[in-house]
Image (cartoon, rainbow, N blue to C red; front, side, top):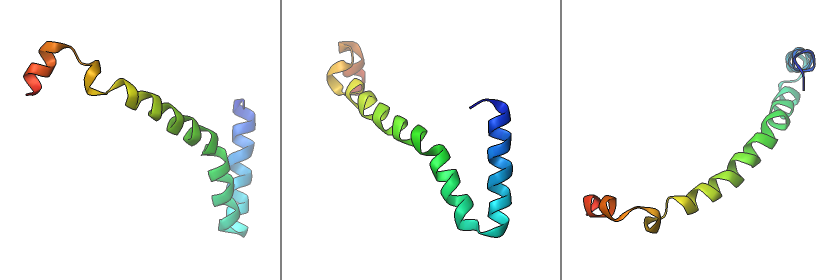
Length: 64
């Protein structure tokens, strides 16, 4: 989405929110849903990186 589309989206969302707030909430959720799903998928990859066997030996000694 370019800037003009974002501006129109938020104007329409606010306008529909004045009519029915549930519609604007649904639009905001749909707007942010792809980023939320992407972040959840990336966090699973990050968890694998932070396992204890990925630390160096000197860091493991300091942690004990």
